[in-house]
Image (cartoon, rainbow, N blue to C red; front, side, top):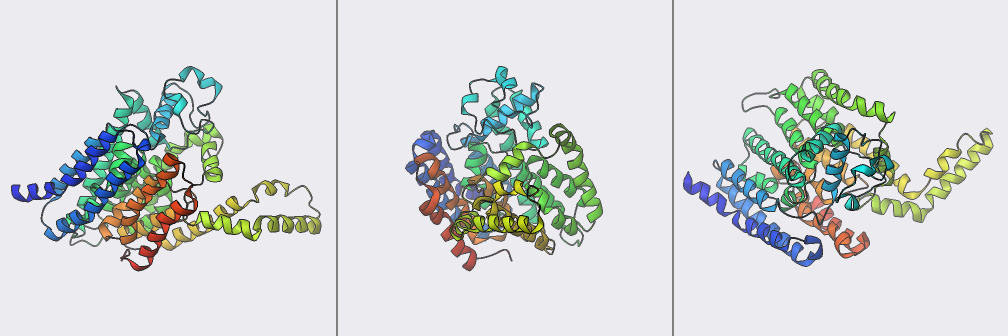
Length: 450
């Protein structure tokens, strides 16, 4: 047993060396070549390590978890040079703890001037109120009350990420899958960088979603889901950490075998937690509206679609059609509010929203929680107008278990999306093509979800 543990730990040594290299670089944004070189070397080693561990089989879960812990602890001291989202988390938590409403008051609000501190100048999107759900806000608030708030926050999300690794190992065991496959998540350089390094809140949601799918997976020898009610709790936690899992509720409800009970638990908890937010903002929080309308970056279908709509003159054509309708109906002022929304980017988002609805409807037919979750979260990402590197974390647990070729490759390719931020290089066309063309080829010809 000791020899097998040592053999497993040995496979994490090159990844640990890459982590220490990143720690030495420290300011990753000002050393893009070295940063991408270290991450690239780690990714080149990861398939080899995963293949060896998977072929060995055995009970290597403890060693995989120990390595996952060490790799994450190594990156906790990294400064936030690739993403400043964690600073916004701490600000929102500070605002909430001071008795203000972060869903209504943006960081630039005059009533928040007394709260401004040394991190305020670095906050992203100062004119936009928070977009983060109540569970995430609670975690932000806890971190602000602890010594060394940024380190405390990173420790919280790293603990959640380690919980996701442990749950994923249990899910692999329950499905009869070699534990070595899980290193595609547990040791993945993208996961290590985005959670322990940059402190993204997605770790809370991913852990909750992995727990949800585990509860929907029958134990060996059983036919019914193991814990449908607990899965409902996990789904609610995922939604209250980040909203994306709400679109998986119809699929998970059917897979639970008790859809009424599952939805009562999950939607009931979400409604209770969201009610004060909705009441305070008199509807959808303005930050979410701003995000839906204005945010756009690296969407693989969005970027070409809105350019195609612009080149085809779709927006002016719709405006002319609206003019003709007003003339025919005599309703001259009733529809004028639509004109500001007739531009290519928003039209593209409307088309992709229809595609998202179709993906959700199609997902209800998926009986396998792992393949179904992977397929749905994958489509949600591809149909999104905004795809930051850490968004890929929502697909990686399922890609790891299914050995999905394209999504595992994307966990490495997506790091190129940092180049526009750290070098000023335009995203379109070359960075965009370098990410999505190889992914598209692998999606067509590589191993899929089945």
